[in-house]
Image (cartoon, rainbow, N blue to C red; front, side, top):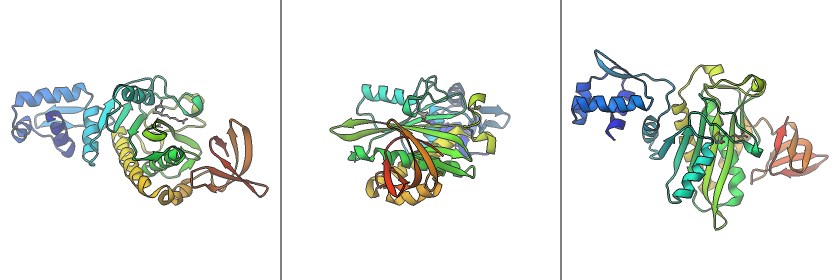
Length: 313
Ligand code: BTN
């Protein structure tokens, strides 16, 4: 706790703070202050020390301590894991299998060695991006809600990224785009209990400061191309905050309060599209969403509901 308190002091200050001031504020010795500073540095927090004291250098660090403290400052007291893993969704499932009673938590990786995408695809996850999974326990949620949660998550990420860059849209169901290039993908998994959703496992991958491999540069982009290097922690905190608030509203009022916002950001609705699903390809005009979140395609005056598939415009 003392380490977090020292980080909070440094994070809130735009000037260096002396070891003496930190020690007297927290009622500890200067030697103890130094030990906590070393611990923060060992965790990857960039703290400079000079004549006037210690100064936190804001940048793109990603540590459990700093992320937990930033979440707590928004009133979100959630356990945080930051580990390099194959897939954060897989790690979350592992944790749940060992402790089925664990509270909501967020699992973040600075990079993934085997990131998983929709339809069993690989999700390239190099250093500098956001690879996170929110494990959330809903209250009495039916399995049929899943598609709406997928849409809601895409909408939350789109809203957060819109604070940084213009021209953000969502390709149904939940790929977030800047212009014509994808910046974020979402993989929803869940744990069921007695035919209800016991846990939502919301996997979110966003290209932030990571380089896009040349073979993907025609179809994928990253945030830093538009607005320079950004703090992944700040964006993660905004996503978790927006998502938790929206899930709360969703559980009371359903998707209706979000439908207009989603349609306003949709790059799919109103366009002639081709949807590839397990049953083959279907073409038509995307005319809207059903209350369950299915895509409504119009062809020759008939409406077809698309439950799952890949949209090509
Ligand atoms: C897609 O675009 O097909 C979905 C990509 C989802 C990627 C995220 S990154 C964090 C989480 N862990 C994974 O292995 N996948 C999701």
